[in-house]
Image (cartoon, rainbow, N blue to C red; front, side, top):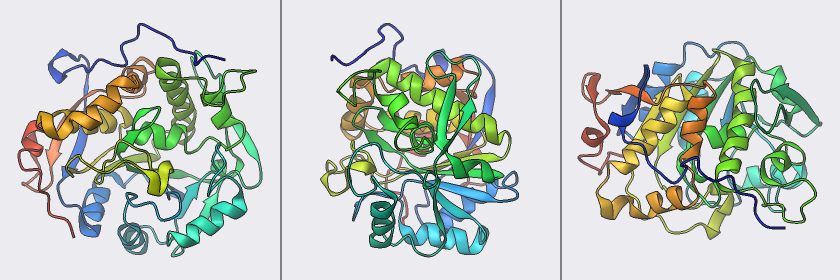
Length: 332
């Protein structure tokens, strides 16, 4: 069966900041790609993370080269979130994280052993409603997710084979959906023998609806951090087979608004010189990945306009172009 595509919603078209309308949210930014930089920016968006906290992190396939450094996350947990769990789900595709047993072995290989890792669909699934959904009126997630009071989406921002880019939206929408039902609802036309039969606009919309169910569940008790480092055009699910990194490191952004966090991340990439951004931009546009942003806005999930606050320069308000004027950030 052919891949299903919904045309005409502009997922291949970048909307420059001056053409956007609506309210502004706060987005924090640092060039400090280190454990200290991660903690510095976390502190700006942490007040709402109360009770039992899950850290939604892409822990990667075995020996994946581009994931967020383990020692950064270990320091964050030790110094800021000592009672938190990393939360994950099994994959839809067969590989190193397809079953819980395989997944736990991969976690050991990648060093995610310093705190509990909750594979949320290990014991089954639960469903959450998605208000005003076009495709998925209720999403299926790992059953453990509803035992958490708060969620930190700690995301490695990068490209994605089908999604164009993977930001907070992908981390939650795909990453919290369980491995057998939720991810199938996002990726596969009913009755198709091609598990990847949904693409472009419809894929972005289904992914976003999945995200909306989760963020509506957590309400105000959710924060978003995107790490713009080692940005291959490939997702971390490709592991050691990921395409080489050719996009410069930029820094870290954080917000209480998922759309603002992902929009700012995309804008920072587009603010790079053409030679530096071309590979990642090509991946975003050819997959119609920018539909993630416009559909989040249509679904009332946040603002694509924002105030970018530079934590390295006395919390000065800046533009993305100012942030990447020097794309040689300090990295510890």
